[in-house]
Every structure is written in C-alpha cells, then in structure tokens.
Image (cartoon, rainbow, N blue to C red; front, side, top):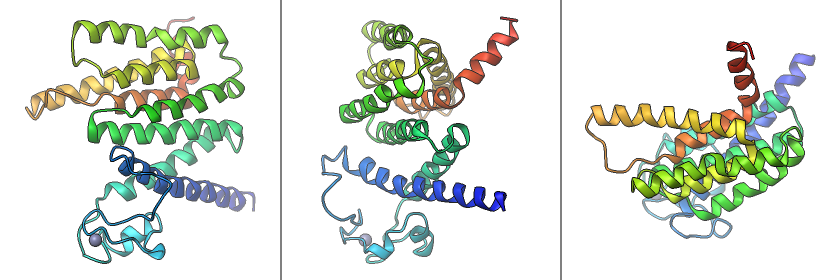
Amino acid sequence: MVLLIQFILYLYIFVIGIVIGSFLNVVIYRLPREVSVAKGRSFCPNCNAPIKGYHNIPVFSYLWLRGKCADCGGPISIRYPLVELFSGLLAVLVFAVYGFSFAWLVVFSAGAILICITMIDFDTMTIPNGLIIALMAPALLSFFVFPQVGLLSRVIGIFIISLPMLALALFIPDAFGGGDIKLMAVAGFMLGWGNTLLAAFIGVVLGGVVAVYLLVKKTADKHMAFGPYLSIGIMTALLFGDIIIGWYLNLFGL
Ligand SMILES: [Zn+2]
C-alpha cells in the first residue's frame, strides 16, 4: 500500500515535470526568436499550422503522431519529447533527493532554467540575459533552502570562477562567452564557493572531453557552447555536491 502511494506520488511528480518540460520547449524555441512565450498557441515550425490541444500532450502526442505534424506531415524534431522526458526525470530526481518541499521547488526551478540555457546555448552559442536574470530567483531563494551555506561563502562563490574566467576571456578571446561568466557568478551565489568549484570542475572536464572528441573527429567549429557543460556541473553540485565533496575529502582523510 505504502509502495503504491509512493509510486503514484513519483508518477505525479514525473507528470508535473513533463508538463513543465513542454513549456520549456516553448521558451527554448521562442526566446532566441524574440517571440513572446506567454502569447499565442504553439504552431508547427514547418507549416505554421496551430497545434490542436489534443495534439499537444507532452511526449504522448509525439509518439501518437509518430513525430510528424498532423497537418503537413513534416517532421517534428525528437528533441521536443526528449526535453519533456528529461524535465520529468529531473523533477523525480530532485524529489528523490529533497522530497516534496520548498527545496524541491527551488532546485527544480534552477534545473528547468538550466535546461533552457543548455538547449539555447547549443542552438545559438549565446545564453540570453533573461535566463541569467531568471536564475537569480532560485539563487536568492536558495538562502532559505541551504541555510548552511553562509553569505560569505556565497559572495566568494560569485567571484571564485567568474573572475578567472573573465581574466581568461581577456587573454584568450573566444575562450568563454560573457553568458558563461554571468552564469557562473549567479550559480556561485546559489552554491557557495565549495560547490561552485565542483560545478566548474565538472563543467571543464565534460566540456574538455567533448572538445577533444570534436577535434579528433575534425568537425570542430571555432566555437563550442560551454554553457551546457557548466549547467550539468551546476545541477550535479545542487543535487549531490555535499556528498561528492564529503567523499573527496574523506579520500584524503580530512
Ligand atoms: Zn505542419
């Protein structure tokens, strides 16, 4: 019985995550094109036909319509249901770590914004300022969720990665974008300096691995979006940072 209730609860959180993921798709598509995310129905990117309500059910409509527009039969990218699924899984993961709490709301909000940053940075090589500003909300609210992270640690967090990145960007043009630097400043306040170092470390290692892979395949453009890897680092630090840091310190008997 308890198991059943727990399963229903997880399913419920998963569905909430998927529905929010559907809205994230709208943000990811419209924000770089400067279309309002609040106004107007969703429409097919091929034929501009408005998408009917019953064809706009996250994930299921994609499977039902086999990835094709109901009007023109044009292909609908698989990334739409993938973003929805990922958002659902993230909602469940945050729930597993933080339970149904204010912390869930704050950490999942941060995760949702990081999903948008990741996809838009992949698409356009820029992180919109609006998303950096949006991330300030969970960053400020994290004060109440992580009271163990003191104000001093947060203020140091703002600068500990963003300043070296800024210095690097001055000496090596195109190393980072301004968006990456701003992202790490806001994340620094949210995480405190210890977890900010962890987030940046994960981001640099992941980004480095991908950069080497792209170089080997010789498909490397001059530019590579760095925001997605930083976002993965920030999310990992938000969910498991204290565990990872504790494990790391233990390794050296500290
Ligand atoms: Zn269409």
